[in-house]
Length: 397
Ligand code: GLY
Image (cartoon, rainbow, N blue to C red; front, side, top):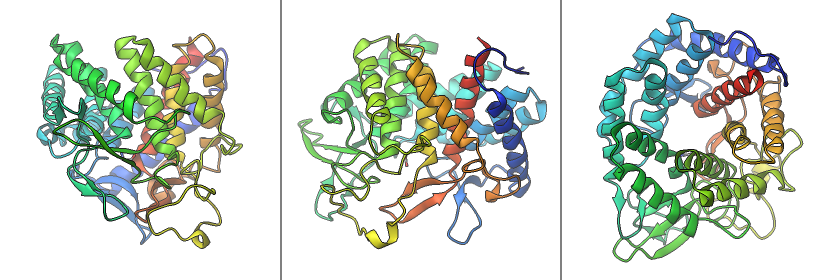
C-alpha cells in the first residue's frame, strides 16, 4: 500500500505519525485485549478511560486501526480492525441519540471501504434506517439528543439539534449511494438545509445547540452545551461545521453547501484569536468580554486557556478535502499542512509508551461539564490519522 510520498510537501510527518500510531495502538490493544472496552481518554486518576458501547466514541478506535491498516497494508492491523469493528454490530439498531453516524461510519464505513464486504454494507444501511427514525418533517431535522435542560436550568430542550449532527449525514448519503433509495439523501439534505438556515450567525460561526418546537418547527432556543457561552464559537463545533458541509458538498455538489464550507473555514482561518501553531483554544471566545457563560465558570482556573487538538485534527482533515473543491484551495492546504506539522511535533505528539498510548495530547472534551480538559481523546487520534492519509495522498498526486 502506501510506501512513500514524493512531490510537494513534507511527508516525513506522515511516516512519523503512523509509526507513532503503530506503537501506541499496539500498546492499547495489549492493555484491552477484548473489544468490550473502547479507549476514550485519560481519566482524572491518570488511567486509561474506556467506554462500553454506550457512548458516541466507540467507532473511532476501530477507525484508527483501519487507517493504520490502510497505511501499512499489514494484515495484523486488518485483523484487529475487523475484530473491534464487528463487535459494534448491535449498535446498528441504536435510535436513542444521533451519534450512530460516528459509531458506525468510522468503523463499518472504513471496513466496507477497505474490504468491500457486502455484510458491512447491510449493517451500514440498517444503521442509516435507525438514524432516519429521529427525523421530523416539521422541524426538517434529525433530533440529536432526547429532552434535556440548558445550563441556565430553566430552558428545556425538547428537540435539540447540535452542529455535530452534520457529521452523521455521511452515513445517510452512503445509504442512498449503495441502495439507490433517495430517502436517506433527502433526509440528509433537509437536515443540512435546516441547519444552514437556523444554526449559523452572520459571521458563519455557529450555535452549538438549536432547540425546536417539534409540533410547529419553530426555533425556541439557540444556545451552547459544550462551548463557552451561547454566543461564542466553540472550536470543535466550528470544525464539525467545516467538515460536515465539505462532506455534504462532496455528496451532492450543491453550491450552497460549498459556500457554507468555505465561509465556516474562512471564519476559522481569519480569526484573530487563532494561536500561531494553528491549534485553536477550545473556544474562540473563551474568557473574552461580551461572552457570559451560564455554567459555573471560574476565570482563576483558566488563566491558561486550554486548546483543543481534536478540533484542529478535524479541521485539518476537512481543509485538505475542501482545497480540492475551490479554485483558491492553496490556503486550505497550507492551513492543514501547518496544523499537521504542529500536531506531529513534540508539543502534541505523545512520546512512545506515554499518554495512556493515545497518539495526540492536549484535547478538550467539555469544559462546562468539567470533563476531559487537556487530555488525549480517541477522536483527535482518528481525525489526525485520517488527515495524514489525505495529506499523503495529496503529496503523491
Ligand atoms: N459530539 C460531541 C463532541 O464533539 O464533543
